[in-house]
Length: 69
Image 1 (spheres, rainbow, N blue to C red):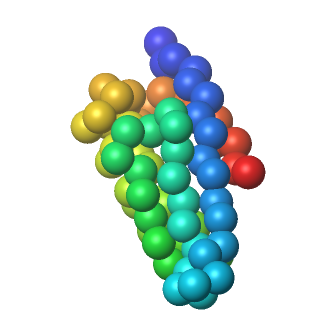
Image 2: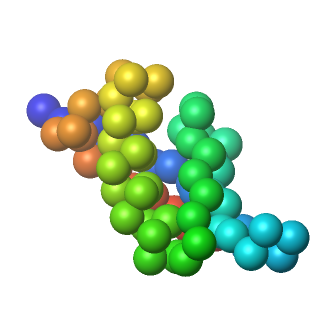
């Protein structure tokens, strides 16, 4: 049986560096920076499952809902 989890990811544009930053109050260790939103999303698709497993014990078979703001 899989479990359902909801997480919030916050994305902001940093004018001083002209980069996008993703952090999360719900996913320990999530700090990603990229030049474009596409690059940020590509990196997030790899890093978020890794962090959820290693920092939260959430398996890849569990349903996860990511809310972006």
